[in-house]
Length: 222
Image (cartoon, rainbow, N blue to C red; front, top):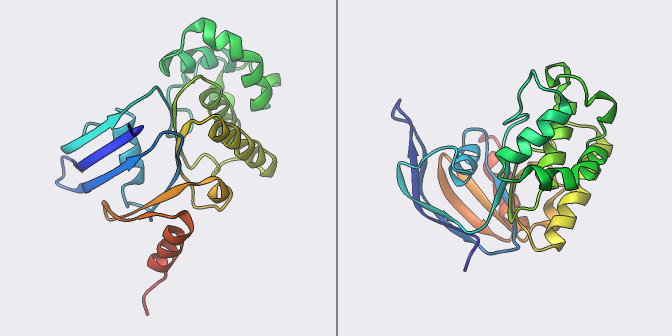
């Protein structure tokens, strides 16, 4: 059975705009799927529906397994709480027991690289520190499926290398990963890709073939 099955998915907002229309696909367990599309194509809306943040207008999205969604920097974090308190808060919001978070705490802190600041409220964190901590929590929890939306958009080269290493480790463990990234760092790990355009799925399959179609689609017309 696939980890994710989407059938005839559509999302219409109150202003009448259809962010997604008639989107259907399946993702097998253990797949690493790259989600491509220009701004406004519907990528983030799709991931929010799969994460149960938004409800679809039409169709269905079936998820088999526990989720770790990292959709926006600091989602589920409370600005007045310290970094340490937010590790526990975010872990619980992602469905983990406090004891499970405590068991992985040293790994999370070491990965984040923000240990000297953990006793400070995260409202004082930079966007890069936010991302480090949020990514560290999300990818060190015992989940079956990971959704990563532009996780490499913030951070230096060392952090991007850490992210890539961790994603490679998750893939080797057989976890299912769906990520949005227009950089090429993840492509060698990708088993397939999906391409959205104006809310519709226009290509799916080999990641290099889909990437070439995305770049061709993004070229300005003369």
